Length: 229
Image (cartoon, rainbow, N blue to C red; front, side, top):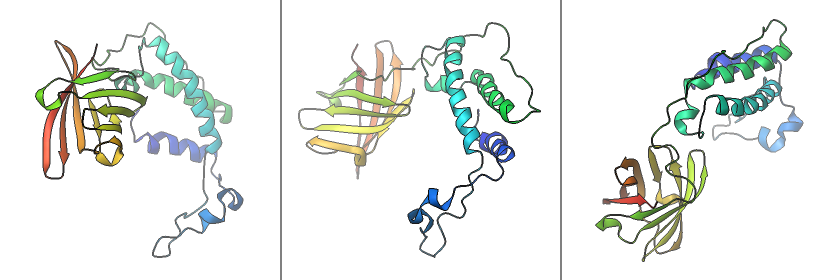
């Protein structure tokens, strides 16, 4: 499902099922309703909130169909490529239709396509950057480097990055193809925060590696980390 679904699906559903939905001044509170931009324009232009209840029901139903899709499409993980796969659309559509049917009489039944569904090809880099994985320096520029992934939450991660001279807790963005973080998102435990880092995940005959480019002011360079098996 594409990002423009907001305009062709979600907004129309909200308006058609709850055209007069709104938040009361009590719900919003005086602090929020009194906020103004520098030119005096209210930050909150209106109190309209159409479709809140039906959207809540749809989200709950999507959570149920999420498990069904995972099993029937033979996924091994919710990798980025699997999250974006077109094969998910019938499950999303069924969740929406099942909830709409409770609110709109004219909505007919919808069943998932019959027959065995093909296994969706996995991205070869899927789950190559999991929690607990350890990456070590593998070239002269990264000798003594150790990078340990501590947390993953969808597209975000937290890791401990250390060498003999510094220890950093970095927070950044990760996908099946890339890893990156900015120096502003580093908690320094020892030494300095370093620069901004952008890395590309690469699979070769020795396993997984990340080729990084870093920049700190006018200084820049490269280094490589290799996954410890």
